[in-house]
Image (cartoon, rainbow, N blue to C red; front, side):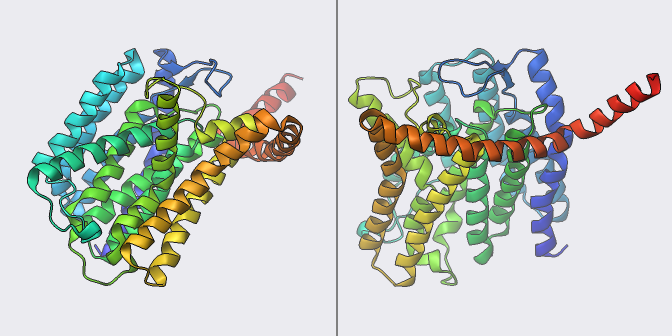
Length: 401
């Protein structure tokens, strides 16, 4: 099988499998009452199943096994085992709830297993800050910090319909393209599998009413671990000079993950500033600010993803002009801070100090969202089969008459 067909199979097979697997898990979630119920911090009006991580993990495993028939990706199996372990812990958290101490310990365990068992870690700085190869202990500490940070950053982003899965699609496609250009087939296949799964999950999560499901920790932890794996593996250190990101891989990763990284930094900093635990939930995430302003979930997700892509564009410009590493990294960091942080501070300022102006903005956002909601309902009706169900009901009424 050619490499191109193999890549298509990796991406398209999850799109076929998710519609068969997800509805069964949603039904099971409601029957077992494993749901996310409405509350003060919640954005939904009715219980929603939180078993979305289970079909995600199942489809990733099935697709990997099918792809392995045509191309040897057995080196990924230890990675999938650690993913499955973290997925089970996420299922427990979705079902019975785990304290933040247990979550932190389990996340650290997953990173440690990958570091020592499969050599996934941050071993090189690629000349960044004058550093090349890190010593084993420094590499371990840097890897542990970055791994746990990324896992929690992705978990924090799972707050509105479609956001976490859209981040998964964007990261999977961008890092998949980067690895494909360098000829790293296995990393490309993993990226495309996760991107395909997230595309299918995004459709059901955003548009479907009947089969709506949240990722829950069982899904967001799997996604976070994938992102950690794809940006920390040793293929990044084996460059052939064929692509623009070669000389700027560190900044490229920062730009790609700009939303999850910068939003988490701001949220945690504000919680600590107000003497609150970092893991205590609130409504200070940017997606909450957009939702409170009147944007629906789809528009909020699109605005956030487009903002993230703007940071990537800034990185691209600095790379094209050949900017040295330190100025280029600073430009990427400044772009991320300005584009990700400024909407929060500007909108909260208007909300608290310029209420009339904020209400005017909110009214416009609600009008736009109403039109998008109609589109979401239309697509959701097609996915849920409501149009065909209505036709059957009308036919039954006609037959009775």
